Image (cartoon, rainbow, N blue to C red; front, side):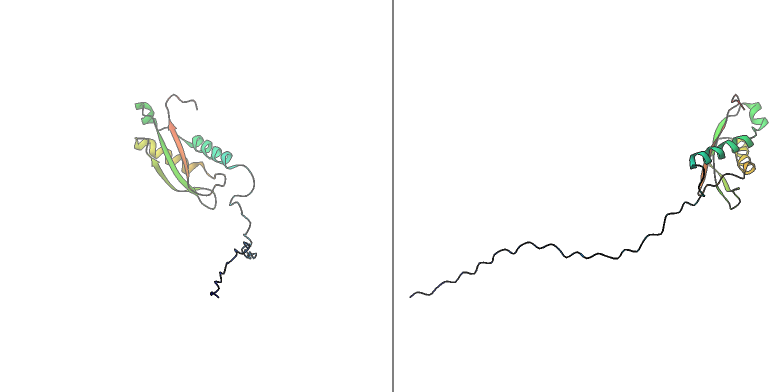
Length: 130
């Protein structure tokens, strides 16, 4: 008799689902707005722009010489909502207009609560309605 040949066939096992265990995920703290509930941010920014424009005084010598331009003034608000760290982000091209823009921001507060740095464009136009 001949030697018997034994073949071992491995049958593929049934696919098993990976073992899934729930993981304890710590609960996230609720998201809190830094500004009390109230007016939308866009409304508050519009009010800031209006207050700055209301405090703006066109330098008489610049007006007389026909100097126009736009300065962008950047600032943040302190705890009393007054402008701090006020600086020209983009010059109008005229030192007199830039100084007037800085003075307007400094005089216009207190402002509505806004957190972070604010940039306000201030346009000097001789024929602009006041």
